[in-house]
Image 1 (cartoon, each protein chain N blue to C red):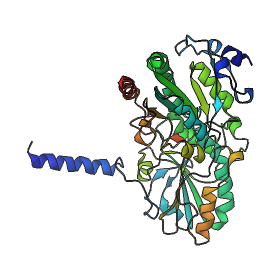
Image 2 (cartoon, one colour):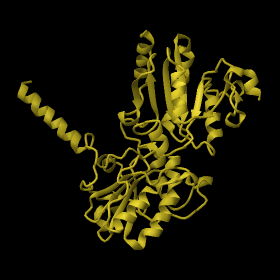
Image 3 (cartoon, each protein chain N blue to C red):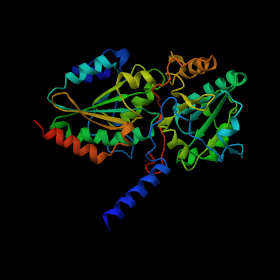
Image 4 (cartoon, helix red, strand yellow):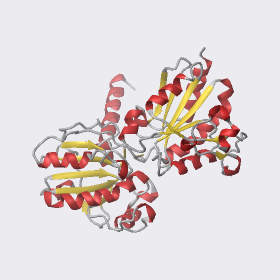
Length: 211
Length: 182
Protein backbone atom coordinates (compact mmCIF):
# COMPACT_ATOMS: atom_id res chain seq x y z
CA UNK A 1 0.00 0.00 0.00
CA UNK A 2 1.39 3.43 -0.89
CA UNK A 3 1.61 6.21 1.60
CA UNK A 4 -1.16 8.04 -0.22
CA UNK A 5 -3.41 5.02 0.05
CA UNK A 6 -2.71 4.81 3.75
CA UNK A 7 -3.67 8.44 4.25
CA UNK A 8 -6.87 8.01 2.24
CA UNK A 9 -7.74 4.92 4.27
CA UNK A 10 -7.02 6.71 7.54
CA UNK A 11 -9.24 9.60 6.48
CA UNK A 12 -12.03 7.23 5.49
CA UNK A 13 -11.86 5.42 8.84
CA UNK A 14 -11.87 8.76 10.65
CA UNK A 15 -14.91 9.88 8.65
CA UNK A 16 -16.71 6.66 9.54
CA UNK A 17 -15.94 7.04 13.21
CA UNK A 18 -17.17 10.63 13.19
CA UNK A 19 -20.32 9.57 11.33
CA UNK A 20 -21.12 6.93 13.94
CA UNK A 21 -20.48 9.46 16.67
CA UNK A 22 -17.57 7.58 18.22
CA UNK A 23 -15.40 10.64 18.04
CA UNK A 24 -18.14 13.21 18.57
CA UNK A 25 -16.76 16.14 20.47
CA UNK A 26 -18.45 16.96 23.73
CA UNK A 27 -21.25 19.46 23.41
CA UNK A 28 -20.87 22.94 24.79
CA UNK A 29 -23.43 25.46 25.92
CA UNK A 30 -24.57 27.42 22.87
CA UNK A 31 -23.88 24.60 20.41
CA UNK A 32 -26.63 23.70 17.97
CA UNK A 33 -28.61 20.78 19.40
CA UNK A 34 -28.02 17.59 17.41
CA UNK A 35 -31.18 16.74 15.48
CA UNK A 36 -33.07 13.48 15.62
CA UNK A 37 -35.81 11.97 13.51
CA UNK A 38 -37.61 8.70 12.89
CA UNK A 39 -36.92 7.33 16.36
CA UNK A 40 -39.59 4.89 17.58
CA UNK A 41 -41.44 5.69 20.78
CA UNK A 42 -43.49 3.65 23.25
CA UNK A 43 -46.61 5.01 21.48
CA UNK A 44 -45.69 3.11 18.31
CA UNK A 45 -44.97 6.35 16.42
CA UNK A 46 -41.76 7.78 15.02
CA UNK A 47 -40.40 10.83 16.80
CA UNK A 48 -38.36 13.80 15.63
CA UNK A 49 -37.05 16.95 17.23
CA UNK A 50 -39.13 18.81 14.63
CA UNK A 51 -42.30 17.46 16.33
CA UNK A 52 -41.83 20.08 19.05
CA UNK A 53 -41.58 23.21 16.92
CA UNK A 54 -44.10 24.98 19.12
CA UNK A 55 -42.26 24.23 22.33
CA UNK A 56 -40.25 27.14 23.77
CA UNK A 57 -37.86 24.73 25.44
CA UNK A 58 -37.20 21.03 24.96
CA UNK A 59 -35.88 18.95 27.85
CA UNK A 60 -34.13 15.90 26.45
CA UNK A 61 -33.47 13.34 29.19
CA UNK A 62 -31.37 10.25 28.59
CA UNK A 63 -32.84 7.63 30.86
CA UNK A 64 -33.61 3.91 30.97
CA UNK A 65 -35.61 1.25 32.77
CA UNK A 66 -33.06 -0.69 34.77
CA UNK A 67 -31.10 2.03 36.54
CA UNK A 68 -32.20 2.72 40.13
CA UNK A 69 -31.06 6.34 39.87
CA UNK A 70 -33.01 6.90 36.65
CA UNK A 71 -36.07 5.26 38.22
CA UNK A 72 -35.93 7.62 41.17
CA UNK A 73 -36.17 10.54 38.76
CA UNK A 74 -39.22 9.34 36.79
CA UNK A 75 -41.71 10.81 39.21
CA UNK A 76 -39.80 14.09 39.32
CA UNK A 77 -39.89 14.30 35.52
CA UNK A 78 -43.63 13.58 35.41
CA UNK A 79 -44.20 16.37 37.93
CA UNK A 80 -41.92 18.72 36.04
CA UNK A 81 -43.74 18.09 32.75
CA UNK A 82 -47.07 18.81 34.46
CA UNK A 83 -45.83 22.05 35.95
CA UNK A 84 -44.12 23.34 32.83
CA UNK A 85 -46.44 22.12 30.07
CA UNK A 86 -48.46 25.34 29.98
CA UNK A 87 -45.22 27.34 29.94
CA UNK A 88 -44.19 25.73 26.68
CA UNK A 89 -41.71 23.15 27.96
CA UNK A 90 -41.64 19.70 26.35
CA UNK A 91 -39.91 16.78 28.06
CA UNK A 92 -38.60 13.99 25.84
CA UNK A 93 -37.15 10.85 27.44
CA UNK A 94 -34.71 8.88 25.33
CA UNK A 95 -33.22 5.47 25.99
CA UNK A 96 -30.21 4.21 24.03
CA UNK A 97 -29.05 1.35 26.27
CA UNK A 98 -28.04 -1.96 24.74
CA UNK A 99 -29.74 -4.08 27.41
CA UNK A 100 -32.79 -6.30 26.93
CA UNK A 101 -34.62 -4.78 29.86
CA UNK A 102 -34.08 -1.31 28.41
CA UNK A 103 -35.56 -1.96 24.96
CA UNK A 104 -38.97 -0.88 23.63
CA UNK A 105 -41.18 -3.72 24.97
CA UNK A 106 -39.98 -3.09 28.53
CA UNK A 107 -40.07 0.67 27.97
CA UNK A 108 -43.75 0.43 27.02
CA UNK A 109 -44.55 -1.28 30.29
CA UNK A 110 -42.57 1.26 32.21
CA UNK A 111 -44.11 4.28 30.50
CA UNK A 112 -47.59 2.86 31.05
CA UNK A 113 -46.98 2.82 34.78
CA UNK A 114 -46.66 -0.95 35.04
CA UNK A 115 -43.98 -2.97 36.84
CA UNK A 116 -43.30 -0.16 39.19
CA UNK A 117 -42.51 -2.13 42.32
CA UNK A 118 -42.11 -0.29 45.56
CA UNK A 119 -39.63 2.26 44.28
CA UNK A 120 -42.37 4.42 42.81
CA UNK A 121 -45.69 4.61 44.61
CA UNK A 122 -47.06 7.06 42.09
CA UNK A 123 -48.46 4.83 39.35
CA UNK A 124 -48.99 7.60 36.86
CA UNK A 125 -47.95 6.84 33.32
CA UNK A 126 -45.30 8.98 31.65
CA UNK A 127 -46.77 12.24 30.35
CA UNK A 128 -44.01 12.72 27.78
CA UNK A 129 -42.64 10.70 24.84
CA UNK A 130 -40.26 7.85 25.66
CA UNK A 131 -38.17 6.97 22.60
CA UNK A 132 -35.64 4.22 21.90
CA UNK A 133 -32.65 4.74 19.64
CA UNK A 134 -31.22 1.31 18.96
CA UNK A 135 -28.42 2.85 16.87
CA UNK A 136 -27.36 4.87 19.95
CA UNK A 137 -26.53 7.76 17.61
CA UNK A 138 -28.53 10.29 19.59
CA UNK A 139 -26.66 9.32 22.75
CA UNK A 140 -23.31 9.70 20.99
CA UNK A 141 -24.36 12.98 19.39
CA UNK A 142 -25.16 14.48 22.79
CA UNK A 143 -22.18 12.76 24.47
CA UNK A 144 -24.56 11.41 27.07
CA UNK A 145 -22.70 9.50 29.77
CA UNK A 146 -25.22 8.38 32.37
CA UNK A 147 -28.91 7.90 33.08
CA UNK A 148 -30.37 10.33 33.86
CA UNK A 149 -28.50 12.97 31.84
CA UNK A 150 -30.39 16.13 30.91
CA UNK A 151 -30.04 18.59 28.01
CA UNK A 152 -32.20 21.70 27.67
CA UNK A 153 -32.68 23.00 24.12
CA UNK A 154 -33.63 26.67 23.91
CA UNK A 155 -35.98 28.38 21.43
CA UNK A 156 -33.27 28.37 18.78
CA UNK A 157 -32.58 24.72 19.60
CA UNK A 158 -29.22 25.46 21.04
CA UNK A 159 -27.90 23.72 24.14
CA UNK A 160 -28.82 25.93 27.10
CA UNK A 161 -28.32 23.54 30.02
CA UNK A 162 -26.76 20.13 30.52
CA UNK A 163 -26.18 17.93 33.51
CA UNK A 164 -28.32 16.62 36.36
CA UNK A 165 -32.02 17.09 37.15
CA UNK A 166 -31.09 18.13 40.67
CA UNK A 167 -28.29 17.43 43.10
CA UNK A 168 -29.38 14.17 44.77
CA UNK A 169 -31.05 10.87 43.97
CA UNK A 170 -32.75 10.96 47.34
CA UNK A 171 -35.49 13.60 47.22
CA UNK A 172 -35.10 14.49 50.87
CA UNK A 173 -31.44 15.42 50.33
CA UNK A 174 -32.08 17.66 47.34
CA UNK A 175 -30.88 21.22 47.92
CA UNK A 176 -30.49 22.48 44.37
CA UNK A 177 -33.07 22.09 41.61
CA UNK A 178 -30.72 22.62 38.66
CA UNK A 179 -33.16 21.76 35.88
CA UNK A 180 -36.19 23.74 37.06
CA UNK A 181 -33.93 26.68 37.97
CA UNK A 182 -32.54 26.59 34.43
CA UNK A 183 -36.04 26.40 32.90
CA UNK A 184 -37.30 29.31 35.04
CA UNK A 185 -34.34 31.45 34.00
CA UNK A 186 -34.65 30.60 30.31
CA UNK A 187 -38.41 31.23 30.31
CA UNK A 188 -37.70 34.65 31.85
CA UNK A 189 -35.19 35.37 29.08
CA UNK A 190 -32.17 34.93 31.35
CA UNK A 191 -29.23 32.58 31.44
CA UNK A 192 -29.49 29.56 33.75
CA UNK A 193 -27.78 30.18 37.12
CA UNK A 194 -25.79 27.00 36.47
CA UNK A 195 -25.68 26.01 32.81
CA UNK A 196 -23.54 22.91 33.38
CA UNK A 197 -23.79 20.61 36.38
CA UNK A 198 -22.24 17.26 37.29
CA UNK A 199 -24.54 14.50 36.10
CA UNK A 200 -24.56 11.24 38.05
CA UNK A 201 -26.22 7.87 37.59
CA UNK A 202 -25.68 4.57 35.79
CA UNK A 203 -23.33 4.55 32.84
CA UNK A 204 -24.96 4.33 29.42
CA UNK A 205 -24.67 0.77 28.12
CA UNK A 206 -22.94 1.20 24.76
CA UNK A 207 -22.94 -1.67 22.31
CA UNK A 208 -19.22 -2.29 22.30
CA UNK A 209 -18.78 -2.64 26.02
CA UNK A 210 -22.14 -3.41 27.70
CA UNK A 211 -20.88 -2.22 31.05
CA UNK B 1 -20.57 -4.07 70.42
CA UNK B 2 -19.79 -7.52 69.13
CA UNK B 3 -17.71 -6.25 66.25
CA UNK B 4 -15.70 -3.91 68.43
CA UNK B 5 -14.97 -6.71 70.87
CA UNK B 6 -13.65 -8.79 68.02
CA UNK B 7 -11.52 -6.03 66.63
CA UNK B 8 -10.93 -3.40 69.32
CA UNK B 9 -8.13 -1.73 67.32
CA UNK B 10 -10.64 -0.57 64.74
CA UNK B 11 -13.33 0.30 67.23
CA UNK B 12 -15.54 3.20 66.16
CA UNK B 13 -18.80 4.62 67.53
CA UNK B 14 -21.57 2.09 67.27
CA UNK B 15 -23.88 4.71 65.79
CA UNK B 16 -21.87 4.68 62.60
CA UNK B 17 -21.01 1.02 62.43
CA UNK B 18 -23.06 -1.93 61.42
CA UNK B 19 -21.08 -5.09 61.53
CA UNK B 20 -21.80 -8.53 60.17
CA UNK B 21 -19.81 -11.70 60.39
CA UNK B 22 -18.68 -12.62 56.93
CA UNK B 23 -18.81 -16.35 57.36
CA UNK B 24 -22.59 -16.66 57.36
CA UNK B 25 -23.26 -14.38 54.42
CA UNK B 26 -21.06 -15.61 51.61
CA UNK B 27 -22.69 -16.09 48.26
CA UNK B 28 -21.99 -19.54 46.82
CA UNK B 29 -20.76 -18.00 43.57
CA UNK B 30 -18.10 -15.83 45.21
CA UNK B 31 -14.91 -17.26 46.65
CA UNK B 32 -15.29 -18.21 50.27
CA UNK B 33 -13.55 -15.52 52.30
CA UNK B 34 -11.15 -17.15 54.69
CA UNK B 35 -11.25 -14.35 57.24
CA UNK B 36 -13.79 -14.17 60.02
CA UNK B 37 -13.19 -10.46 60.56
CA UNK B 38 -16.35 -8.38 60.58
CA UNK B 39 -17.16 -6.31 57.54
CA UNK B 40 -17.82 -2.72 58.46
CA UNK B 41 -19.13 0.37 56.73
CA UNK B 42 -18.50 3.86 58.06
CA UNK B 43 -19.59 7.28 56.89
CA UNK B 44 -16.66 9.34 55.71
CA UNK B 45 -16.38 12.84 54.27
CA UNK B 46 -13.61 14.07 52.01
CA UNK B 47 -11.55 15.58 54.86
CA UNK B 48 -11.60 12.38 56.90
CA UNK B 49 -10.81 10.40 53.76
CA UNK B 50 -7.67 12.49 53.19
CA UNK B 51 -6.57 11.65 56.74
CA UNK B 52 -7.22 7.96 56.17
CA UNK B 53 -5.04 8.11 53.07
CA UNK B 54 -2.28 9.87 55.02
CA UNK B 55 -2.39 7.06 57.57
CA UNK B 56 -1.40 4.58 54.86
CA UNK B 57 1.87 6.21 53.81
CA UNK B 58 4.38 3.56 52.89
CA UNK B 59 1.69 1.38 51.35
CA UNK B 60 0.08 1.29 47.93
CA UNK B 61 -3.58 2.29 48.25
CA UNK B 62 -6.41 1.25 45.94
CA UNK B 63 -9.74 3.07 46.34
CA UNK B 64 -12.80 1.53 44.72
CA UNK B 65 -15.71 3.96 44.28
CA UNK B 66 -18.95 2.04 43.87
CA UNK B 67 -22.68 1.89 44.63
CA UNK B 68 -25.38 -0.75 44.84
CA UNK B 69 -27.25 1.09 42.06
CA UNK B 70 -24.28 0.61 39.73
CA UNK B 71 -24.20 -2.84 38.09
CA UNK B 72 -20.69 -2.62 36.61
CA UNK B 73 -19.49 -1.61 40.09
CA UNK B 74 -20.87 -4.78 41.60
CA UNK B 75 -19.36 -6.79 38.77
CA UNK B 76 -15.95 -5.26 39.39
CA UNK B 77 -16.05 -5.52 43.18
CA UNK B 78 -15.13 -9.22 43.52
CA UNK B 79 -11.93 -8.40 41.66
CA UNK B 80 -11.16 -5.63 44.14
CA UNK B 81 -11.76 -8.00 47.07
CA UNK B 82 -9.55 -10.59 45.39
CA UNK B 83 -6.73 -8.04 44.99
CA UNK B 84 -6.94 -7.42 48.71
CA UNK B 85 -6.75 -11.11 49.54
CA UNK B 86 -3.89 -11.64 47.13
CA UNK B 87 -1.73 -8.57 47.72
CA UNK B 88 -2.43 -7.18 51.20
CA UNK B 89 0.64 -8.98 52.54
CA UNK B 90 2.80 -7.28 49.92
CA UNK B 91 1.68 -3.84 51.02
CA UNK B 92 -1.57 -3.15 49.18
CA UNK B 93 -4.28 -1.34 51.13
CA UNK B 94 -7.78 -1.59 49.69
CA UNK B 95 -10.49 0.95 50.52
CA UNK B 96 -14.04 1.09 49.21
CA UNK B 97 -16.25 4.18 49.12
CA UNK B 98 -19.95 3.78 48.38
CA UNK B 99 -22.08 6.51 46.83
CA UNK B 100 -25.27 4.95 48.14
CA UNK B 101 -27.66 6.93 50.29
CA UNK B 102 -26.15 6.67 53.80
CA UNK B 103 -29.59 6.28 55.39
CA UNK B 104 -31.75 4.44 52.91
CA UNK B 105 -29.23 2.14 51.22
CA UNK B 106 -26.62 1.61 53.87
CA UNK B 107 -27.86 -1.81 54.95
CA UNK B 108 -27.99 -2.98 51.33
CA UNK B 109 -24.44 -1.75 50.73
CA UNK B 110 -23.18 -3.51 53.85
CA UNK B 111 -24.93 -6.73 52.90
CA UNK B 112 -23.18 -6.68 49.54
CA UNK B 113 -19.79 -5.95 51.13
CA UNK B 114 -20.25 -8.83 53.54
CA UNK B 115 -21.15 -11.18 50.70
CA UNK B 116 -17.99 -10.18 48.88
CA UNK B 117 -15.86 -10.70 51.97
CA UNK B 118 -14.74 -7.08 51.97
CA UNK B 119 -12.64 -7.29 55.11
CA UNK B 120 -10.97 -3.95 54.50
CA UNK B 121 -11.88 -0.32 55.10
CA UNK B 122 -15.34 0.33 53.67
CA UNK B 123 -16.78 3.81 53.66
CA UNK B 124 -19.98 5.49 52.50
CA UNK B 125 -20.22 9.11 51.40
CA UNK B 126 -22.37 11.28 53.68
CA UNK B 127 -23.83 12.94 50.58
CA UNK B 128 -25.32 9.83 48.96
CA UNK B 129 -25.87 9.59 45.20
CA UNK B 130 -25.48 13.12 43.96
CA UNK B 131 -23.33 15.91 42.66
CA UNK B 132 -21.78 16.62 46.05
CA UNK B 133 -20.30 13.12 46.31
CA UNK B 134 -18.87 13.35 42.81
CA UNK B 135 -17.32 16.75 43.53
CA UNK B 136 -16.11 16.03 47.08
CA UNK B 137 -14.26 12.88 46.07
CA UNK B 138 -13.12 14.41 42.76
CA UNK B 139 -14.50 11.83 40.38
CA UNK B 140 -14.88 12.29 36.65
CA UNK B 141 -17.68 10.47 34.88
CA UNK B 142 -19.75 7.51 35.94
CA UNK B 143 -18.97 4.81 38.49
CA UNK B 144 -17.15 2.52 38.92
CA UNK B 145 -13.90 4.37 39.39
CA UNK B 146 -10.69 3.13 40.94
CA UNK B 147 -7.91 5.39 42.17
CA UNK B 148 -4.40 4.17 42.85
CA UNK B 149 -2.02 5.95 45.24
CA UNK B 150 1.67 5.12 45.53
CA UNK B 151 3.65 4.56 48.73
CA UNK B 152 4.26 8.31 48.99
CA UNK B 153 0.53 8.96 48.94
CA UNK B 154 0.51 10.45 45.45
CA UNK B 155 -2.47 9.74 43.19
CA UNK B 156 -0.81 7.87 40.32
CA UNK B 157 -3.63 6.47 38.23
CA UNK B 158 -7.41 6.54 37.86
CA UNK B 159 -9.46 3.87 36.15
CA UNK B 160 -13.03 3.96 34.84
CA UNK B 161 -15.30 6.99 34.79
CA UNK B 162 -14.95 9.17 31.73
CA UNK B 163 -11.93 7.14 30.58
CA UNK B 164 -14.13 4.08 29.99
CA UNK B 165 -14.67 0.81 31.80
CA UNK B 166 -12.19 -0.51 34.32
CA UNK B 167 -10.00 -3.23 32.81
CA UNK B 168 -9.11 -5.62 35.67
CA UNK B 169 -5.92 -6.80 33.95
CA UNK B 170 -4.73 -3.24 33.42
CA UNK B 171 -5.51 -2.52 37.05
CA UNK B 172 -3.54 -5.60 38.20
CA UNK B 173 -0.53 -4.49 36.19
CA UNK B 174 -0.66 -0.97 37.62
CA UNK B 175 -0.94 -2.31 41.18
CA UNK B 176 2.02 -4.66 40.63
CA UNK B 177 4.10 -1.79 39.26
CA UNK B 178 3.39 0.43 42.25
CA UNK B 179 4.06 -2.41 44.69
CA UNK B 180 7.46 -2.97 43.11
CA UNK B 181 8.41 0.68 43.65
CA UNK B 182 10.21 1.41 46.88
